[in-house]
Image 1 (cartoon, rainbow, N blue to C red):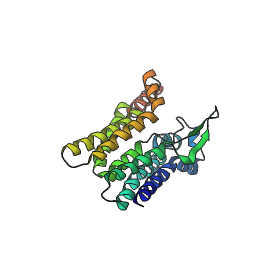
Image 2 (cartoon, rainbow, N blue to C red; image 1 turned 30 degrees about the horizontal axis):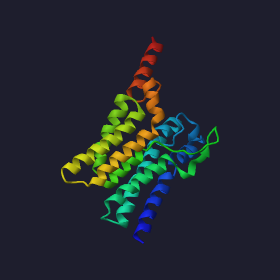
Image 3 (tube, helix red, strand yellow; image 1 turned 45 degrees about the vertical axis):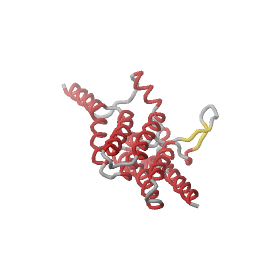
Image 4 (tube, one colour; image 1 turned 90 degrees about the vertical axis):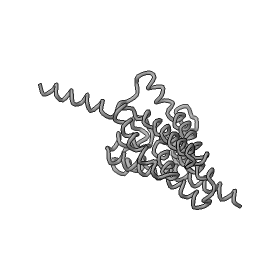
Length: 226
């Protein structure tokens, strides 16, 4: 019976993670299909490209809740099962990246599941496991996003920071081994999802964000005013 309940928790976490909030928010606010915009992903960064800052922020918040709610559900079901507390947000990340609600066939007729890259639900899972992690991940993530200027690097850094947080807490006797594993598994999932972006980075084709586009726009405006 316990095994069935645990499986049910993981399944519910996956299904909740599969809800494409970005797609819904952009569709409601602009009528656009987010899957047809830029990267085609349904996360906050692409929602911001399609519908502006508020849509991107709302998407990121809702996607973050996927991971946090998954942890809270697992903790409510079995407070002492550390592995379930970790597997639930991992399932939410998988649902976010490979949504059962976004099943389709590609141009070659191959079946695939669409979704995001997993950054926001990774943060949400970390917050569910230890809420002060938000006070570390958020400012560092913003610094990477606006400083380095690549959304994909920011997403990867989120998983790296999460892993570091729980590794330090584990060394101090404040976290469990499964929590460290959460960061590592999330990192692997994010790296896998971001394979096209990593290739674009290597080839110099990745989109800039943060201060670089702003600086370029400022220079162009100043030049046009001369």
